[in-house]
Every structure is written in structure tokens, then in C-alpha cells.
Image (tube, rainbow, N blue to C red):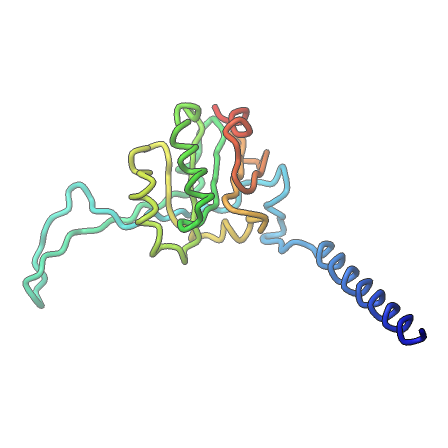
Length: 198
């Protein structure tokens, strides 16, 4: 009888210790950059540097390499900062992973409802480590067919500053003054986004 009570007490103490440890993790402060918690409603847009994949420039010239006779095309990479994303409407930034099926579904949803975003800007941002997979995502999802969607790689730590680590995709919506007004995680119904689109 004493053994059974001892085992029950030990299990209860273990559960309490585990529960306390879990509660402490939830209370841990967020990693704050620049003295600002960019994940909070009302926070300003953090620094942005979105780099698109290398693309062939329209005026790319074929030129011969002096070491061998192979031909090379000139590649250009476009960069977007806060200045290029400025407008008088909301900014939608979707943090995504190019190999995530939920992210593909959300991208298709945005493409099907692109007319809803007449003045709002749409930015799809992947972690720089996803460069290898981004080209296939762009081709498969036909993102290039929608010039109002800007897609590229984060090279300013935007994702580190804003990602909530809940689910992908995550859509951060900033107002025309570039203050965070809403964050969605996971698969987001178009009706939820509609009220923020302009």
C-alpha cells in the first residue's frame, strides 16, 4: 500500500514540475529587436529588404567568357525596401515556406481573389535559406502571372522579428502608416482578409 501511495505522489510531483516548466516557457519574454516587439498590434513595420530571385534582364546580352566559349546571360536581382512598399493602402506580408502545402493553398486563394487587392500591396516573403525551392514555387504557383504580388527572400531579419511560430503561412497586415493592425496564422479564409483589402 505504501509503495502505491509513493508512486502516485512521485507521479503527481513530476506532473506538477512539468506543468510548471511549461507555464514558465509561456511566460518567457519574446525576443525583442531594436527595443521593439514587432509582433504586437500597433508595432511599426520592421526594416524590410526583400530580394527577388535572379531573373534575366529584358536587355540581357549574350557575351562570351574569355576562359571558354560558353555564353552567359546577365542576371539582375531586384530589391525592395520599405520605400518601394510605400502606398496609401494596407500592406499584406505573407511569411511562407515554398515547400508548405498550406502556403500553396493560401497563395492560390490570393491569386483567385487578386482583384480584391486593388490598392493594397501583397508581399510573399520566404526565409533566405529557402532560395533553392523558391524558383519551383514561383513556376508551379504561376506567381509571375500576377504583377501585383511581390515574392522574394528576406534578407533583413523581418521574419525573425515578426514570426509568431504558430503556423505557416503567417500574414501580417500593416495600415497605410505601416503599423501592424492584424496577424493571421495558418490557412486564412478570404473573408477574414477581405475587410483589410483595399
